[in-house]
Image (tube, rainbow, N blue to C red; front, side, top):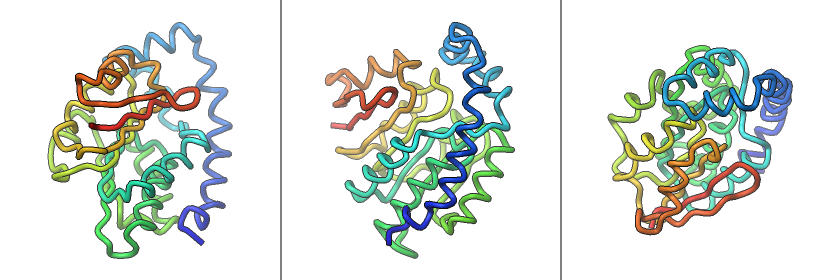
Length: 218
C-alpha cells in the first residue's frame, strides 16, 4: 500500500470539507471574482473573506500531483498556496514514496493566512508527513525569495493567481531541465500563460483538464 492510499480517509474528509466551501466561493459575482483574482492588490479582499474556508485542488488534480511527482522522482518541491494542505499531502506522499523515511525529500510550502497554515500543519501531522514539509507563513514574494534548494524538481502554483509570473520569476533560476510546473486556475493569470507557452522563454506547456496548466522547463 502506498502512502497516498493510507491517506485516503483523511483526504476524503478534507475533500468533503472543501466541497461544502465551494458554494461560498461561487457566491461572489463572476465579474467581481475575476477582477479581484486578476489584481495584484485587491485579491487580498477575496482571500481574506475566505480565510477560514478550505480551497482545495480537485480530487483529479490531487491525483495528478502525486503521479507527476512520483514519475519524475521529485526530491525538491515548492508549493505556492498551502490552504488546508490537501495538495501538500499529495505532494508529500509522493516524496515519501520516492525516498522513504529519512530519504531527504523536501517540500517548501507557503501560506499567507495563519489560520490555514495551522490547519495544514495539523493535517500533515495526522498524515505522518510533517517531517518532509516546511510551512512558511507570510507573503510568498518574501518567503520564496530566500533559502531555496539549489535545484527544484516540481512547483505547484495555487495561491493568488495574479502573482504567478512573479513567483515563477523567483524560482526560475532553480528549475532543473525537465522540472514540472503545475498552475491551478491558470486562466486567471494570462501573463503567466503567455510566458510558459512561449518556447523562447524556455518552457513547453499544455492545458490539462478544465483549469490546470502543466508546463515543463526545457
